Amino acid sequence: MYASVIGLKELIQMEVVHIGNEIGVELEKEKKKKSTENNNNNNKSRMPPWWNKFEQYHNELEARAVDDQPLFICPIMKTIMLDPVVLSETGNTFERNAIEMWLSESNLDPQTSETLTEEPTLVPNRSLARQIRNWCEDTARTMSAEYESDSGSQVILTKSHVFVDASNILINPPRPLSDKILIDFLRACGRDVVEAHVAGSRSLQRQPWLSAKYKIHHDNRRGPERFVDDVLIAQALATAQKSFDPPRLLVLCTGDGNLNQGRTNFPVVVQTVLASRSWEVELITWRVKMNKCYYKFQKHYPDRFFIRFLEDVLDDDEPATAPR
Image (tube, rainbow, N blue to C red):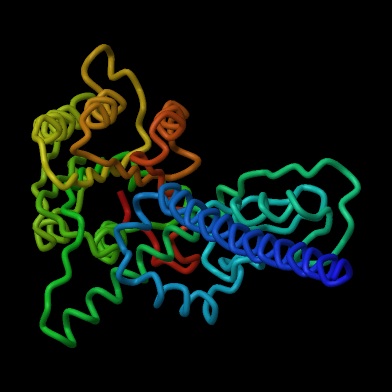
């Protein structure tokens, strides 16, 4: 009788342990589930706005990148990198979220299995980030046009207002660039352009801009150009006063950041536009000709101000620039 009681107690204890283990397993599953949900929510919230705009194309972009742009793919997550960083000790590039999680559990380089002897340092790869964004935007817009052509359905693109300082971009460029090539580039980005202005000197080639439905503002006076940008700035400021929902894109094609002898200038335009939540700004410029003041906007408005360097998006064999 006593032995049977002892046996019963042991059975009960074993059952308690078993149930406890089951509860522990279930709690661990729930913990992992919540952790995954939190990570997914955090990852989604950390995605840049430009990527969210093309949500319907994410899967296709991932598939195309694997075949066409393998360097854009994170070795850990096997997805397009939106915030690429370089692991300083090995020089390999990963998505920030992925490598941070990896390094919290391991001291090995996930790509080479090399042991990391130093405290890992992650350096933003901004050049690659620009290339990835440019490729994704252009590819998504190409897919949008293909979809519209095949199905007859219209895909909504961001409405854009374009302002081109032709003198700054086209006179003495660091690489050959003609009016037509610049126009074709702006058109190829697939923006839904609802307003387009170009300002330039008497050497501006009018016909390509008129054919592309740009409103031309030019200064016919001889001598130094002093007021050629004023009307473009005035037009941009007038547009900036308007409010839109959803937000629109103001595309400013210039590198000029001068104070304009005390008159209103392009940096004031950018600051005015960014003061409103109705706008995002894309600056298209030459890297070597851009005023450094624009970097402060990139720092303060990383989700709403973007710089696109012509050196990164134009082919090396562009046709020669027309004489000016």
